[in-house]
Image 1 (cartoon, rainbow, N blue to C red):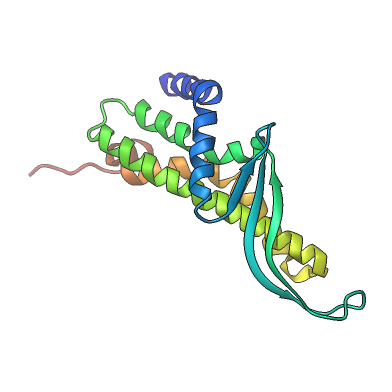
Image 2: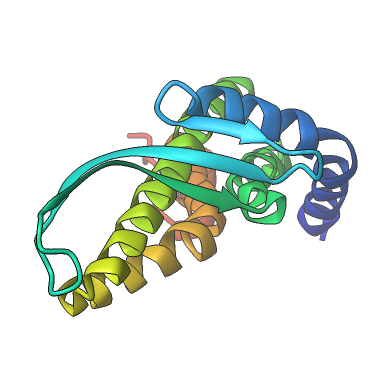
Length: 185
């Protein structure tokens, strides 16, 4: 019960106070890999570098080299990639009298931030390839692309905090997975 209240409280704090600064940090980190500009409404315009040669078509008899794809990413979609850290915090803080809670908290926060950046960049890259494959009319990429474009923004940001918390905190693994504790001789 206290874990649920903690989750609600931390998510409210994230929504009202931390989401903006976390989005700014995520955008700044992403700019090491892609060009990101924020417009006045907070939405992102992303220029994703991609090097692909489009084959000739009936409408365009010469092959065409593409070096980048411009994408618009609504602020609400970008926010999904900052959600994992507060969920992770709530999980770790909800562990009663956990040993090494501070270590799990700090290390997990850093790992979670890296995951969020990777998820965002994967989403951008897959969305860019999706746009290119639609131009080409390439149905072969459709199934895998749809799966990744579903999992990356809609599933993984919500699942990874739980797996990471279990991986980093032994006491949580024991409590959740009901692992046997060491027997003293």
